[in-house]
Each structure stands twice: as structure tokens, then as C-alpha cells.
Amino acid sequence: MSQSKKEKFHHWLDKLIPTYARLPLFIVVVFNFSVYFLSRLFAADRKHYILSSALDSQIPLIPWTILIYLGCYLYWIAYYLYCSGLDKERGLQFLLADILGKVVCAFCYTLFPTTMIRPEVTEPGLWNDWIRILYQVDPADNLFPSLHCFISWLCYIGVRGNKTVPRWVRSFALVFSILVFLSTLTTRQHVIIDIVAGVLLAELCYFLATRVPVLSLLEKFRKKQTDKGNHQYPHKNN
Image 1 (spheres, rainbow, N blue to C red):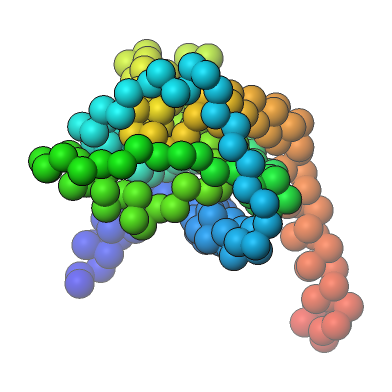
Image 2: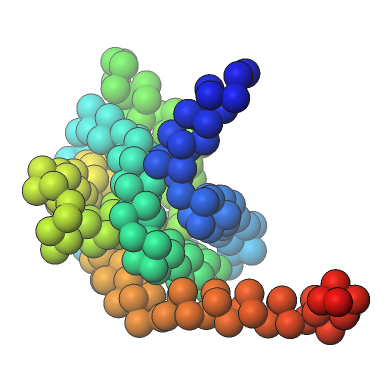
């Protein structure tokens, strides 16, 4: 690869994922899967509670909405990259909110595991096949709060009220988040209280994260590491 192509690639990468966001984004991804799968192991032998309401039992299974339920992963990727790159401090606070929420979810999934009764899907058809596969690979646990709803709403919060973000980007986040909420019900992956908990958790964690002066803390950490290095290797200053 020529030097000019390398420079163009690095410029494109910097615009897509700013340097300051790369490690936090990696931590977010690893932490997400760790919380989801490890908590399942710790909670396997614990009593699982059913939080379904009478209203939940009236919601029908609508198999084609699995497109929204699974398609939200693309939504998350796009908006996490977008929100983390809008502004350094707010971007890091956005990712901090994600991690705070996942910590809460880890405790909930481990200490208060929940489950639900899913319908039997016996009719043939493409969408029904997808639902059956989903049920096989994703057991009915780790439900409260809903990670799908927490992450989707956090994406919306990240652009909400920001006038530098195009209106259509903000509107799409709101509409699609609501569609994700509905899809968690119509695929029978969650119940209503899981959605409410996910939304409230996103609001709380973002509120707390934006109160953390992340840039000041990072600067203090760098200064401390620099001072530590100067004490260990004083000859470098000579």
C-alpha cells in the first residue's frame, strides 16, 4: 500500500472511529458479550422469576418482526460509532453510560434471573423457521432489564436534543427504538416490564455518565503515569 493510500485509510478510519474511542468501543463490545453469557452461567441454578402480566399474554407472536429484532444490531453499530465520534467528552460519556448499564444488567441477570413462557412455533414458513432458530440459540433468560431496549434507547439518547445532529438522524433513532421495543414483544423475547426497565436504566446511566468529567480524569491519569515514569527513569529528563 502506497503512502498516500495509507494516509487516506488512516484519515477515513479516524473519521469513522476516532482514536480516543477505539479502546472504549472494544471494551463495550467485550463487556456486552461477557455480561450476557457469563451471567447466564452464574444464574443457571437459581430460581428464575416470571414477570409476565395479563397484557403480555394478549400480545400475539408476529414472526416477521424478527427482521427488526435482529436488524437492530446494524442500528446499534451505526449509532454507537456516530455517538462516540460526535464530541470527545460526550462520546466517552456515552460509552461510559453503556458500561454502567451493563454492570447493572449483570447484577440483575445473576441475582434476579427471569424467564418467560414462549409459544410453540410449529407452523412452516421462513419467518417461523427464523423464530425457531432464535429460540434455540437464545434461551428465555437474561430478560430484565432488556438489553435490546437499553441499547436502542441509549442510541436515541445519544443524539436526542443535539442540534448538530441532522433531524432525520434523531427522528430515525426514536422511531426505530420504538420498533425494537415492539419487536421484543411480538417475537416473544421479552415482556413489557423488561422494556420499561431497559428505558429507565438507559436514562439513569446516561444522566450519571454525563456528570462524570471524563476528560479531566483522563488528563489526571496521564499526568500521574507520566510522573510515575519520570520517578522510575529520572535519567530520561536529563
